[in-house]
Image 1: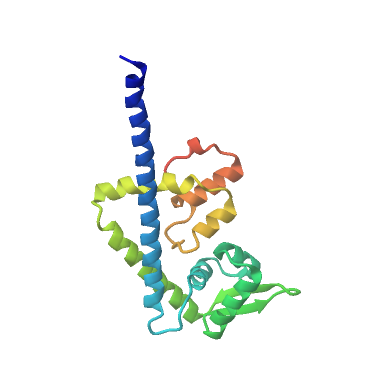
Image 2: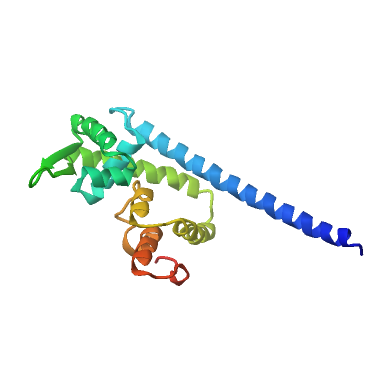
Length: 204
């Protein structure tokens, strides 16, 4: 067989692999857009009878619900805002009666949620979980278990450090996804401990 004819199937195979990779990338991109659309819908529903919340403000409420008290700089890093932008967003949440500022020693300011803030955070989380449940409802129980295993691998792969983990997990319900149950947090801990990625099993 001429060399060109032998090479043709290999070339087609490489082209098919490239097309498959691009198609998978499209799937991930579309899933990303689907989840972002769902989250925007959650924020819109939660703001129907209350002042509107931005995505960053919603993340602040959810994070403070679990991890308060925290400082402005720390919270800004979690939600991905500069200190001035974070302060402006917090001003609105304070005006709405959702967040309280308290000053400790010196100029250190600590942030906590008011009772209304906790209620708003729980409302957001319930609606977020309901929106995700609708998507997961398209899968059977076996498919959901397989998805969980694959999702853990995808979520762990890009983790670079603890700051990355906190930012990605800013909307999470940390009451159910903390410690060994969080694949992202587990990977961040492994990096801090020097554990190789291949030594990580699926979180239990």
